[in-house]
Amino acid sequence: MSIGFGFDVLGGRVKYLGLADFGTGRPGVIAGWTNRTAFDAAMDFLVAPSGSIVLDDAVTISHQISFIVEFN
Image (cartoon, rainbow, N blue to C red; front, side, top):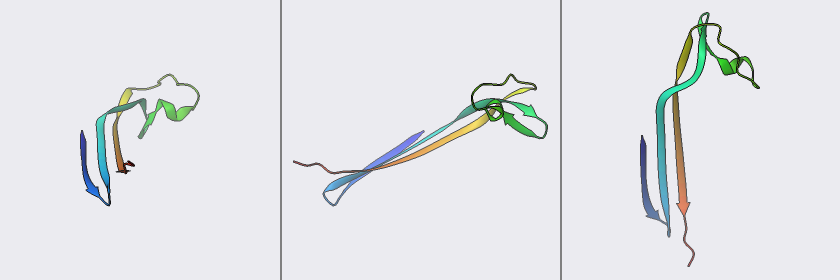
């Protein structure tokens, strides 16, 4: 999902862009009371799962604001 708009101000243009991504995220295993991702165990390598495999939900939201000035 995305949204964007722009308007002119002070001899330039202001632009906004918002992006959102909703979906499945990092693979992991159910460990006891909490979900634990395989990446939490070690930073340099992926540990083999020792329980039920899960995909935690992932939400990524980003915003970008630009001020554009043209020089002639």
